[in-house]
Length: 317
Image 1 (cartoon, rainbow, N blue to C red):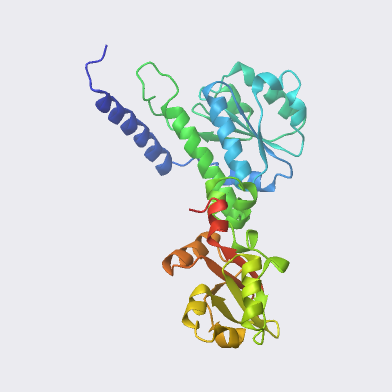
Image 2: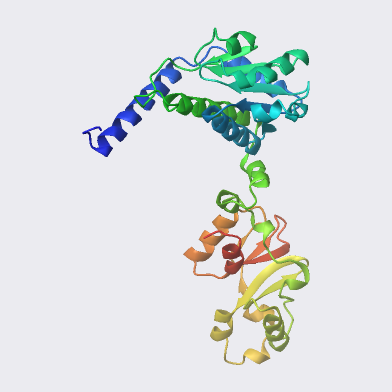
């Protein structure tokens, strides 16, 4: 049993893996650019496979690729030998992960790729291994020790994961994959919520409390009450001219019912656009102690209304 403190063991592990990542950064595999060029030209999907710990890493790499604009899928090598090879077509590209390059379970996949001319990218520490020699491109992992004394996959899986991230990010940038695209693949995630635009949650059409400048305040109060947002938008000639809030009502309490909406409204109100990120609109509301923002087009036309509760319901906090 070790007499070292757990924190000392942790620091040793992190130092070992950090050194390996630094080594890989300084000596990035020569084939990296060619691999990216191959994957960008792939008409089908990027299939990623590996056995054991490499399989878990392969699944993560496939998921990262798929979520950042590169169609990808993980195939388990054991299942591949029992029918799942049908998922791999001549339009695809294959990434096979094996630290030793001698993983027996990959044999059927390698043979299938050779038969149907599916290009193979190997990620391995042994470029002259069986896998390395059969692959079209080899991304060689650094010759660094595992972080544990018994040789369990630790440093090697960390480096493979990092290399997969490098592939995914390079593909993402070269494809021009933007935040808007990411949102389409992550509508239920926290990050997806942060990328929602005002247009995704705003109220429109008959839900909007709209009056004209010459609408009586009696009718304006009815409109405000019916729509339930505590405001009324004053619109004329298809353009927003002002807004009436509870504060405007209090400031004009004297002879309120003898006035028109145009006389009571605050001119040039604070607004937002439909393309504004919802989190930014929420920030404006919080900073200015508002619960509602009217949404207008570039032309000045009213197109919606966003309430602070809409942002909270969408997961933007």
